[in-house]
Image (cartoon, rainbow, N blue to C red; front, side, top):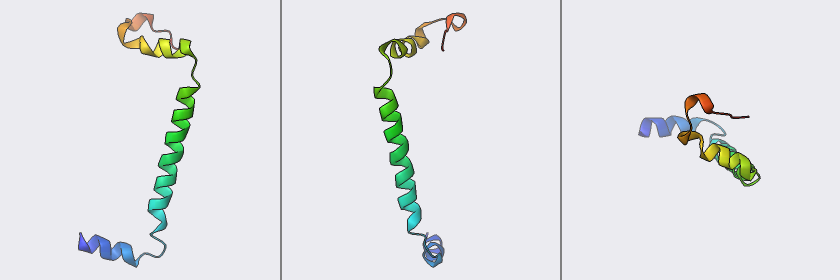
Length: 61
């Protein structure tokens, strides 16, 4: 592990990668949360019942 840490420390600007990863994760999580909260109740009901329906009767729009 020391070998990897040594090479990572020698790369200039490597400290920005964890920050970029955190920003991407936070943005993705926020978008999914907002989209989920804005879903119609009918759409939620459709997704909720998918495991109980037959494969021939699935009507996803």
